[in-house]
Image (cartoon, rainbow, N blue to C red; front, side):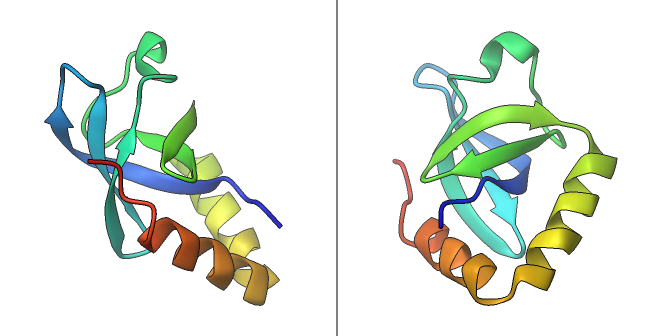
Length: 90
């Protein structure tokens, strides 16, 4: 199962190449934010992350609700977090 997991932008790592550090459930990784740059993103914003790419910008309420739902999925959520932990974009 492939999931988009909410993560919060905590740092812009490489403005030129659209790379940001995003925290997802305590896991911090560099992800490409090129697809969401037109939405006007910044520090503290929430995005849905899938295999190293921010796919869309979401608000904090949606992020928290989605995280709670994902936690209830159990194993599928844990697998996606593991995939995220190994998919760092530099």
